[in-house]
View 1 (cartoon, rainbow, N blue to C red):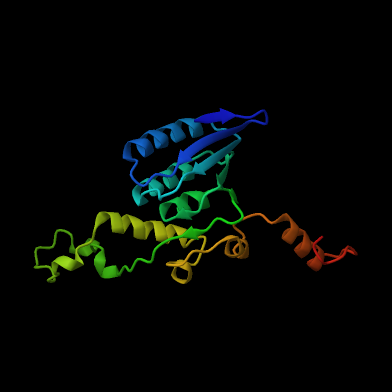
View 2: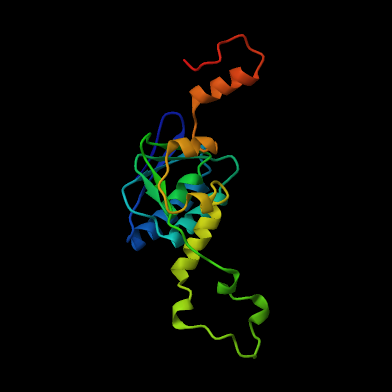
Amino acid sequence: MKTQTRQGRRRFQLKIMSYGNFYYIDRIAQLERVLARKPRVLQIDMIGIGEIPADYSLLIRSVLMARSPKTRVITSTRSSLQGGSVLVWLMGDKRIIRDDARLYFRRMEWSEDDETQSSAVGNEREHEYRDSFSEIDPQDADYVRVLQRINEFLPVKELAGRPFGIPVLRQFGLVDSEEWDQFLANAFGKSDQPLVPA
Protein backbone atom coordinates (compact mmCIF):
# COMPACT_ATOMS: atom_id res chain seq x y z
CA MET A 1 0.00 0.00 0.00
CA LYS A 2 1.35 3.40 -0.90
CA THR A 3 0.23 6.76 0.35
CA GLN A 4 1.32 10.33 -0.11
CA THR A 5 1.60 12.79 2.74
CA ARG A 6 1.04 16.54 2.54
CA GLN A 7 4.79 17.16 2.44
CA GLY A 8 5.13 15.23 -0.85
CA ARG A 9 6.59 12.12 0.78
CA ARG A 10 5.45 8.85 -0.76
CA ARG A 11 5.17 5.82 1.49
CA PHE A 12 5.65 2.27 0.27
CA GLN A 13 4.94 -0.74 2.47
CA LEU A 14 7.18 -3.80 2.17
CA LYS A 15 6.21 -6.85 4.22
CA ILE A 16 9.01 -9.13 5.32
CA MET A 17 8.02 -12.67 4.38
CA SER A 18 10.39 -15.60 3.92
CA TYR A 19 8.16 -17.42 1.44
CA GLY A 20 6.40 -14.69 -0.50
CA ASN A 21 7.60 -15.17 -4.09
CA PHE A 22 4.51 -13.75 -5.77
CA TYR A 23 4.30 -10.97 -3.18
CA TYR A 24 7.88 -9.80 -3.84
CA ILE A 25 7.50 -10.00 -7.62
CA ASP A 26 4.39 -7.81 -7.40
CA ARG A 27 5.89 -5.34 -4.88
CA ILE A 28 9.12 -4.92 -6.87
CA ALA A 29 7.09 -4.08 -9.98
CA GLN A 30 5.09 -1.55 -7.94
CA LEU A 31 8.30 -0.09 -6.49
CA GLU A 32 9.62 0.44 -10.02
CA ARG A 33 6.40 2.25 -10.98
CA VAL A 34 6.56 4.49 -7.91
CA LEU A 35 10.21 5.38 -8.55
CA ALA A 36 9.48 6.07 -12.24
CA ARG A 37 7.36 9.02 -11.04
CA LYS A 38 10.53 10.45 -9.48
CA PRO A 39 9.12 11.34 -6.06
CA ARG A 40 11.14 13.77 -3.98
CA VAL A 41 11.11 11.40 -0.98
CA LEU A 42 10.11 7.74 -0.83
CA GLN A 43 9.74 6.11 2.57
CA ILE A 44 9.85 2.32 2.54
CA ASP A 45 8.13 0.96 5.64
CA MET A 46 9.38 -2.56 6.33
CA ILE A 47 7.09 -4.61 8.54
CA GLY A 48 6.92 -8.19 9.72
CA ILE A 49 9.27 -10.90 10.84
CA GLY A 50 11.32 -13.22 8.69
CA GLU A 51 13.79 -12.50 5.97
CA ILE A 52 13.56 -11.18 2.43
CA PRO A 53 15.11 -13.91 0.24
CA ALA A 54 18.56 -12.99 -1.08
CA ASP A 55 17.60 -12.83 -4.76
CA TYR A 56 14.70 -10.46 -4.07
CA SER A 57 16.79 -8.23 -1.81
CA LEU A 58 19.42 -7.96 -4.59
CA LEU A 59 16.66 -7.11 -7.06
CA ILE A 60 15.21 -4.45 -4.75
CA ARG A 61 18.72 -3.03 -4.36
CA SER A 62 19.13 -2.78 -8.15
CA VAL A 63 15.77 -1.00 -8.47
CA LEU A 64 16.73 1.49 -5.74
CA MET A 65 20.17 2.05 -7.30
CA ALA A 66 18.52 2.91 -10.65
CA ARG A 67 16.27 5.62 -9.16
CA SER A 68 16.50 9.29 -10.03
CA PRO A 69 19.29 11.06 -8.14
CA LYS A 70 16.65 13.56 -7.01
CA THR A 71 14.71 10.89 -5.11
CA ARG A 72 15.71 10.49 -1.47
CA VAL A 73 14.90 7.11 0.08
CA ILE A 74 14.08 6.60 3.76
CA THR A 75 13.95 3.03 5.03
CA SER A 76 12.01 2.50 8.23
CA THR A 77 11.47 -0.61 10.33
CA ARG A 78 9.96 -1.36 13.71
CA SER A 79 11.10 -4.98 13.54
CA SER A 80 14.41 -6.74 13.94
CA LEU A 81 15.93 -7.59 10.56
CA GLN A 82 17.96 -10.46 9.22
CA GLY A 83 19.78 -11.44 6.04
CA GLY A 84 18.46 -9.86 2.85
CA SER A 85 16.14 -7.60 4.86
CA VAL A 86 19.23 -5.93 6.35
CA LEU A 87 20.51 -5.10 2.87
CA VAL A 88 17.20 -3.51 1.81
CA TRP A 89 17.12 -1.42 5.01
CA LEU A 90 20.73 -0.27 4.47
CA MET A 91 19.81 1.08 1.01
CA GLY A 92 18.06 4.08 2.54
CA ASP A 93 19.65 7.52 2.42
CA LYS A 94 18.18 7.83 5.91
CA ARG A 95 17.46 4.79 8.06
CA ILE A 96 14.97 4.53 10.92
CA ILE A 97 14.85 1.56 13.28
CA ARG A 98 13.17 0.81 16.60
CA ASP A 99 15.51 1.46 19.55
CA ASP A 100 15.59 -2.15 20.76
CA ALA A 101 15.55 -3.85 17.34
CA ARG A 102 18.43 -6.10 16.31
CA LEU A 103 20.10 -6.91 12.99
CA TYR A 104 21.47 -10.32 12.15
CA PHE A 105 23.05 -12.07 9.18
CA ARG A 106 24.38 -15.59 9.22
CA ARG A 107 27.98 -16.47 8.49
CA MET A 108 28.62 -17.90 5.03
CA GLU A 109 31.96 -19.29 3.91
CA TRP A 110 32.83 -18.72 0.28
CA SER A 111 36.00 -19.22 -1.69
CA GLU A 112 37.17 -18.06 -5.10
CA ASP A 113 37.24 -21.71 -6.23
CA ASP A 114 33.47 -21.90 -5.78
CA GLU A 115 32.86 -19.53 -8.68
CA THR A 116 33.23 -20.55 -12.29
CA GLN A 117 36.30 -18.90 -13.72
CA SER A 118 35.73 -17.22 -17.07
CA SER A 119 38.89 -18.84 -18.45
CA ALA A 120 37.45 -22.30 -17.74
CA VAL A 121 34.26 -21.69 -19.72
CA GLY A 122 34.43 -23.42 -23.07
CA ASN A 123 37.63 -25.19 -22.11
CA GLU A 124 37.47 -28.86 -23.09
CA ARG A 125 39.97 -30.09 -20.52
CA GLU A 126 38.59 -32.11 -17.65
CA HIS A 127 37.53 -30.10 -14.62
CA GLU A 128 38.89 -30.78 -11.17
CA TYR A 129 37.06 -33.47 -9.24
CA ARG A 130 34.52 -32.08 -6.79
CA ASP A 131 32.39 -34.20 -4.52
CA SER A 132 28.64 -33.75 -4.20
CA PHE A 133 29.05 -31.81 -0.94
CA SER A 134 30.98 -29.04 -2.68
CA GLU A 135 28.20 -28.14 -5.11
CA ILE A 136 27.19 -24.51 -4.93
CA ASP A 137 23.55 -23.77 -4.23
CA PRO A 138 22.41 -20.72 -6.26
CA GLN A 139 20.57 -19.40 -3.21
CA ASP A 140 23.78 -19.57 -1.21
CA ALA A 141 25.61 -17.73 -4.00
CA ASP A 142 22.94 -15.00 -3.87
CA TYR A 143 23.29 -14.82 -0.08
CA VAL A 144 27.04 -14.37 -0.45
CA ARG A 145 26.38 -11.44 -2.82
CA VAL A 146 24.02 -9.99 -0.20
CA LEU A 147 26.81 -10.23 2.39
CA GLN A 148 29.24 -8.56 -0.03
CA ARG A 149 26.79 -5.65 -0.43
CA ILE A 150 26.19 -5.43 3.33
CA ASN A 151 29.98 -5.32 3.74
CA GLU A 152 29.91 -1.94 1.94
CA PHE A 153 28.19 -0.59 5.08
CA LEU A 154 29.22 -2.91 7.93
CA PRO A 155 32.16 -5.29 8.58
CA VAL A 156 30.49 -8.62 7.80
CA LYS A 157 33.33 -10.85 9.05
CA GLU A 158 33.22 -9.26 12.49
CA LEU A 159 29.43 -9.06 12.83
CA ALA A 160 28.14 -12.21 11.08
CA GLY A 161 26.60 -14.81 13.32
CA ARG A 162 25.68 -12.51 16.21
CA PRO A 163 22.82 -10.05 16.64
CA PHE A 164 23.69 -6.37 17.06
CA GLY A 165 21.75 -3.16 17.55
CA ILE A 166 21.70 0.61 17.60
CA PRO A 167 25.11 1.16 19.26
CA VAL A 168 26.90 -0.65 16.40
CA LEU A 169 24.78 1.14 13.77
CA ARG A 170 25.63 4.49 15.38
CA GLN A 171 29.30 3.60 15.43
CA PHE A 172 29.22 3.25 11.63
CA GLY A 173 27.04 6.34 11.11
CA LEU A 174 24.08 4.34 9.80
CA VAL A 175 21.40 5.84 12.05
CA ASP A 176 20.79 9.40 13.13
CA SER A 177 21.62 10.48 16.62
CA GLU A 178 20.92 14.20 16.92
CA GLU A 179 22.07 14.34 20.53
CA TRP A 180 25.39 12.64 19.72
CA ASP A 181 25.91 14.73 16.56
CA GLN A 182 25.37 17.90 18.60
CA PHE A 183 27.81 16.67 21.24
CA LEU A 184 30.48 16.01 18.58
CA ALA A 185 29.82 19.38 16.92
CA ASN A 186 30.29 21.12 20.27
CA ALA A 187 33.37 19.06 21.15
CA PHE A 188 35.21 19.79 17.91
CA GLY A 189 33.75 23.19 17.09
CA LYS A 190 34.67 26.59 18.45
CA SER A 191 31.66 26.90 20.66
CA ASP A 192 31.28 28.03 24.26
CA GLN A 193 28.32 25.66 24.75
CA PRO A 194 28.68 22.81 27.27
CA LEU A 195 30.16 19.57 25.89
CA VAL A 196 27.86 17.19 27.74
CA PRO A 197 24.66 16.22 25.89
CA ALA A 198 21.53 17.50 27.64
